[in-house]
Length: 238
Image (cartoon, rainbow, N blue to C red; front, side):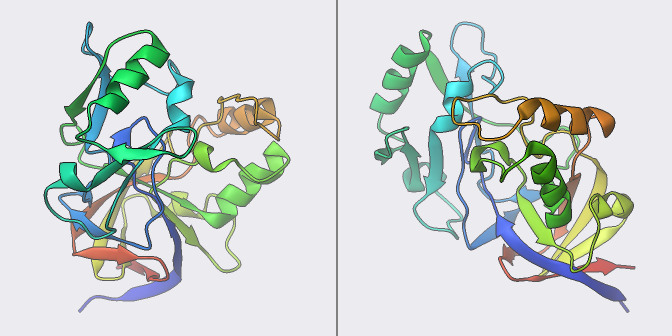
């Protein structure tokens, strides 16, 4: 018999169809393989080198975004994906014009490639509200949404920052989905990003990350289940 302790609730979901573009915040998402179906399904790559583009090398990409036209899409992802430019205009993923425009903006030819499964089998990132609140106090104001790259944000009533670190090696149940917490993560949010819109102090945020050895939040993988939904209870499973 499974013994579970309710430790909090899922307060936000994020899914990133195309890496490293901005993503979406669905109310619910289906589980597929070890992660969320459709999360980081594609990489933008330099056609000449074949290397995936990163936000560090091309920060302008963070101001573009991608989303699915239906939260619970489970097949034919290409036809359901919409790409958004910095002005808010959208076009279908299958329309080649957005790649042409992006290539012109970046000064290099950009292509879209299907992303292989995560090498360590732990494609998802989770961070707690107390950890994010500490990061915001350090930063000096609320984090810009494009900084936060975690897939799941959970609230822990009366919890402390970095509470999630204690769960490494354990299992969580969120809704009907069982997840394994595998290791600390180093990519739940972008500390060093310094856009003109930055309202806080990125240097202070980088200092916090450095003190933490680069780790903020945890990496997780789905073991079983069908979907997760904002508002689901989060249980620590024995």
